[in-house]
Image 1 (cartoon, rainbow, N blue to C red):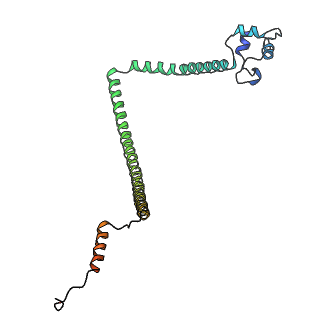
Image 2: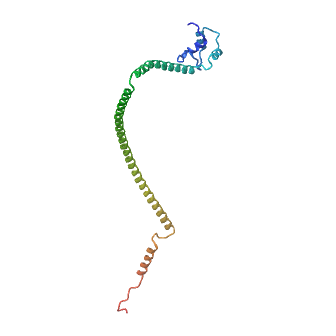
Image 3: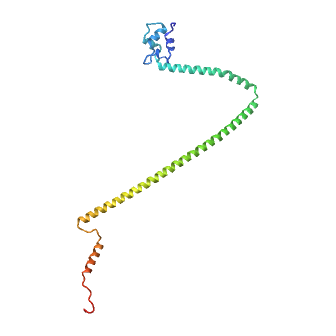
Length: 209
């Protein structure tokens, strides 16, 4: 390969070729030496020639150059067509052109109306499916909530029943400890009254009087 300038050699490096770059993303010196046919070249010379050059920068430069080339080619392809339209426009009567534009716009409006109707139908069907799923979700949620509420009520009733039982058991323990009877005072009074009545003397008969 013939010798080229250092700047041209750096611009010719391919960022996609691993063999031309170091692990740090810098140009390999042996590749640069081969391109310019100069074994005395140093890293300092390379840095001074292009201070920003690294593999990442080279990749961006290559992409920008490719985009610019594509844009230029596209522009070159459009120019004849635009020029032809301009020439045709000069030959057309302005009034006729306006009428043609109006007809074209009317056709576009009609096509858009058809597309809008189709889109409206899709939206309505999608909303219907969404409402059905939401209703299903609400029903499942309500059933789950009802079951949860019933279980919570049963649990609270069981806890209240257990609390009352425990309270009554403790009261009975206390009453038994003091030597008292668990019956109320009215029951105790009635028991005493019945006992006294049983010890009364028998009623006197007329003969005894």
